[in-house]
Amino acid sequence: MGTVDVANKDVTASLADKKPKVVFVLGGPGSGKGTQCANIVEHFHYTHLSAGDLLRAEIKSGSENGTMIQNMIKEGKIVPSEVTIKLLQKAMLESGNDKFLIDGFPRNEENRAAFEAVTKIEPEFVLFFNCPEEEMERRLLSRNQGREDDNIETIRKRFKVFLESSLPVIEYYKAKGKVREIDAAKPVGEVFEAVKVVFTPKDEKVKSHGFSFPLLENESHCLGGLRNSTGDKLAYSFEVVCHNLLHITVF
Ligand SMILES: Nc1ncnc2c1ncn2[C@@H]1O[C@H](COP(=O)(O)OP(=O)(O)O)[C@@H](O)[C@H]1O
Ligand SMILES: Nc1ccn([C@@H]2O[C@H](COP(=O)(O)OP(=O)(O)O)[C@@H](O)[C@H]2O)c(=O)n1
Ligand SMILES: [Mg+2]
Image (cartoon, rainbow, N blue to C red; front, side):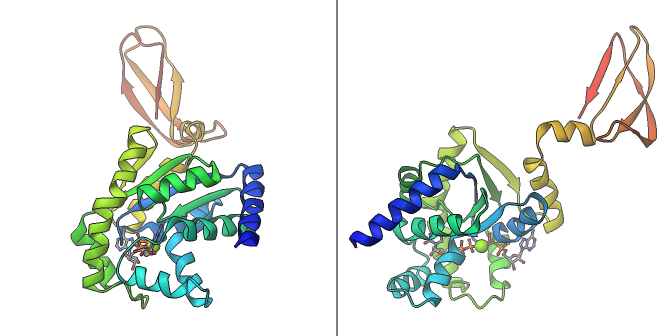
């Protein structure tokens, strides 16, 4: 026990030195967290850490906590934070990266408070996939990954836990202005378009999608054009009507 605690202190200290950037990815079971995290990794070079995947790997590894974790997952219950946080810390350190998508965590107030107390890491923001239950249920029942918790009985329990324990965590971060909410009921590609906007830095958005052009005072018509990030005009142009404006920027 003593050795484990010392080892974990070392892990915590090494992680604190790295000052990692963390985004929590939350949403109900089946809302598409894992699917979208895979897309984000490809485009934005984060390391994806799914708390559920780490717990399932721990069961497979034959760890002393395996049976307890397995029983909790079957019942849709949330595993004690101590276990999950250690797995997350270890995976963060081993990854060598400093940007993480932490998927499916924190799932309750205990997860949230313990992670903050142990790691001293505040998330940059929380990506929240909002999806109606009927859609999540349909997706989980056809997920086909052989998961013991993707049956209707456990799914109902997981929905209850989400409403009672996980939504309050999202509300907590909403009050801090940290939640970026995405309509997750749409097709995968459309959801990712909305996700990309969240992850694209503001100045990049202006450079790649915005247009900006000077106008003469009182000029009422002006031909404008979209410019790409290097300032070249894109192929098409269009007319806008404006009054008493010296400059327009739209993005
Ligand atoms: N936008 C979507 N529309 C339809 N099906 C989706 C969408 N996003 C994910 N899925 C599918 O739904 C199931 C659950 O997605 P997953 O990413 O595992 O969700 P979560 O990690 O939130 O439980 C998977 O089978 C996945 O292929
Ligand atoms: N922070 C977490 C995350 C998951 N889990 C457990 O792992 C299960 C599956 O989580 P998951 O994130 O893989 O599930 P999905 O939301 O991806 O369907 C949860 O229902 C919990 O039993 C947990 O105990 N604590
Ligand atoms: Mg998942």
